[in-house]
Length: 238
Image (cartoon, rainbow, N blue to C red; front, side):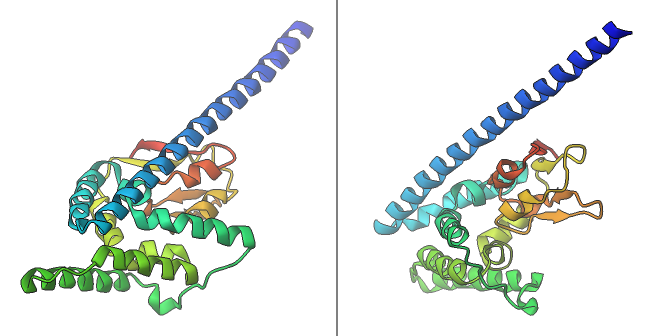
């Protein structure tokens, strides 16, 4: 009896130790992925600036097209890893958190899904007009400047979910994606740290208090996975 109890005690201790080691390894892996993402973000931001300064910004649309094609498989990787607008929004978000400033939440009537399609139609109309007229306007640099104005004043998720035309296109194209960040219902304890870390409204609270990720809204930035204290979030087959 005593030996059996002792064996069970040791098994329990080692089991908990294995879980802790596994958790630490997973957190380290996520940390490395975030570092890689930040390096990729910076590299593409520098490329965007170089193309803007040399008058070759039209080549960026080829990169965006690649992002759209990739989204059918892996979702909105372009948004979280390549988009210069997302990269520029990061230091603003960090600064606001540090000094404790809260941004404005737009009125309810400006948070409807209709708004994103108005901006998308305006963007596509402008692109067609440029083509017909043979005029070259700095559309991407203008969008970038508009983003900075928006994220200084308004909640960032409004830009990603209701304003950015690129985000709207990728929201639609990423719906068939077969790989996505998902919350494990077995591991999730409902802390909500992931939801606070998400720059969009991709994470929702279920009736159970646990969280779930809406894949086509997710930017694949890994912020939620890094914020989760129990390692409940990972990339899985959808």
